[in-house]
Figure (cartoon, protein in one colour):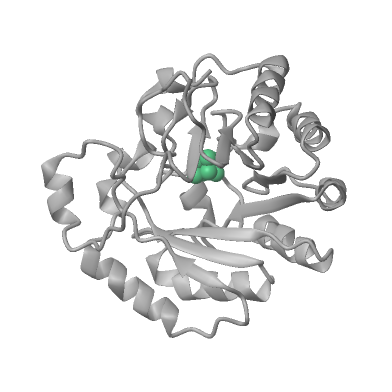
Length: 275
Ligand code: SF4
C-alpha cells in the first residue's frame, strides 16, 4: 500500500468553464488520466480512506471544482469526518457567490484563486469574461475577514501588465500572492510561444520585486518544467540556468486525480494505485 504524503490535492473534476491556453492540467495531453470521473460515493470513500491514514491537509481543485454539484457536500463531508483537518478550495471564482463565500468562512474552508490577466483576461481564459468578478471575489473575501490566496501565472500574453496584476491583487487584499511562469505542461505544451527563457523570467521577477508589497506576502515559483516527467532535451536546453531545488513531489504533497488514482504532482503523467 502506497504511503500518502501529508498534503493532498484532490482534483475532483477535469471539467472547467475556462479555456486557459496555459492550463497545465495533464488531461489536456492525456485525457485517459481523468477518466472515469468519480461520483459522490467514490470521493466519500477516498476521504474516509485518507482520514483513516491520518491525512489532515486537503486542497479541493479541478478543473473547476465548483462545476461539481456535490462539491459543497464533499467539503462538508470532509469537515465532519476530519474536524481538525485544513480544508481548502481552489476555484477560478466565476461561480462563487456571497452565500458560498460566507459558507466557506463558517466551515473554515480556505480559499484559493487565480488572476489570469486584466486587459488580457478574456484571451487568457478563453472566455468573454473580464477580471471584475475575480477581483471582487478576492476583495469580498477580505472584507469578510476570510481572505483568499491568489496565484498568478505569467506568460508572454500578460507579461506587459504583470505589475498592474500584482498591484490589483494587493489592492484587493489577497492573503498571499504566488507568482510563477507558465509551465509547458498540459495545454501549454502546445503553446511554447507563451513561455519565457530563464533570463526573461528573471527580468519579470526583478520588475515585480521593485513593486511595493502592500504588506501581503508574495513568493515566486520558479519551476518551468516538471522534474517528475521525462522532458525533451530541446525544452530542457531552452530553460537552462534554472536553479532547480530538490523536488518534494510525492513526499510532502501529492495528487489524487479525477479518476481516483494517485500522482506524484500536478504535472506528472503516471496514475498510481494507492489503495
Ligand atoms: S488554468 Fe484553471 S481556470 Fe484555466 S482552464 Fe485550467 S483549470 Fe480552468
